[in-house]
Amino acid sequence: MAHFIDRRLNGKNKSTLNRQRFIRRYKKQIKEAVSDAINNRSVTDTSSGESISIPQRDISEPIFHQGKGGNREQIHPGNDQFATGDRINRPQGGQGAGAGEGEASNAGEGQDDFVFSISKDEYLDLLFEDLELPNLQQNQLDKLVQMKSHRAGFCSDGVPSNIDIVRSLQNSLARRVAMSAGKKRQLAELEGQLAILLSSKNVDKVAVSLLEKQINELKRQIKAVPFIDDYDLRFRNYEKQPQPTSKAVMFCIMDVSGSMDQATKDMAKRFYILLYQFLTRTYKDIDVVYIRHHTQAKEVDEQEFFYSQETGGTIVSSALKLMNEIIAERYNAGEWNIYAAQASDGDNWADDSPHCGEILRNKLLTAVRYFAYIEITARAHQSLWREYQAIANTKDNFAIQHIRSVEDIYPIFRELFKKNRQQQGAA
Image 1: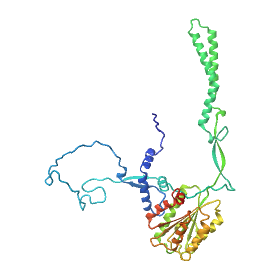
Image 2: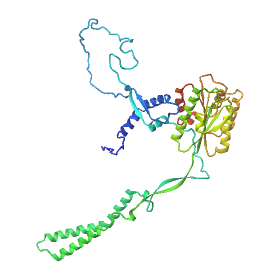
Image 3: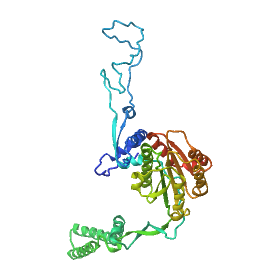
């Protein structure tokens, strides 16, 4: 059996490996704690680390020990209430010992939960694990081809920053062996002959002098072989290849009408901040288009999307029309993966909801990869939900979810963007 010991340095954090093992081992408990922690954060605080608590019972290690076997009898001094064979009732709860919710009491001892701090990167990795944009496809090569560098072996010419030291030293060693191996063998033979002459009774000084000259000359020639030569140098070679581009855009559509109170808007903002963090964390290049609407829709920047106080009535179709116009103007469906996430309280003019359904069926859903609608309300569903639900029953790339409280945001977010969601929905 062979044992491999990893003695590589871990940098400043000397417990990196142990930390990774701990996260893998108690991943379920840590993810549950992360899910609970996100609900207690402020609206904008979703990109920092977290201190999470894990119950002691979840991290306790099972142990084997040898117990006392058989039937045993014990005598407790001071007993004046029980006789042999009596059954003792379990103590009742109350205002005395054990009345609290925790493990500790005034008659015993308990243990605090284990507090474990995770970094920003670990927090976001756990937050967005197993999530993806559904139905993301690689587009065909654009007219403006994107080139990406790939490793393509080694070459003898290059810039110093690309030099491969290991490969160059291997070439140097091979060259030195090839140039000096024959001379070293000849040197060993001559040194052997010299030793024989010097050990004989009658030393031939002329022969010894001749051998010494030959030996010195061979040593000089061996020493003259350079340790490294320009011929030995090898450089990492890179070549550029055309890459299919997976260009994607996400439309964030938020209802800011008068029926959306501050609490409802805060929940919508929490959802969109989660979505923005997920997109920028998981994908390198993605466009985000922000649209706010009441009776009229307007494309805005990130600052205005989250902080503007503008409000008004409700006509949802205005936002869908604006989205369709932006797609026609800037985002060709054949070149872009188009996604949309719409948040509203469901309040809309009754005669406008069928119009929204018509725009979705005939225009938007033929162009987008995935459209997610979340309704944030504690009231009964209205005409917009019923219209959207009919679409969701017939279209695989359309999904609706209902958020009632802050605790629903993260589970529903994961449900909307979990991996292989498109295949599961089709099945």
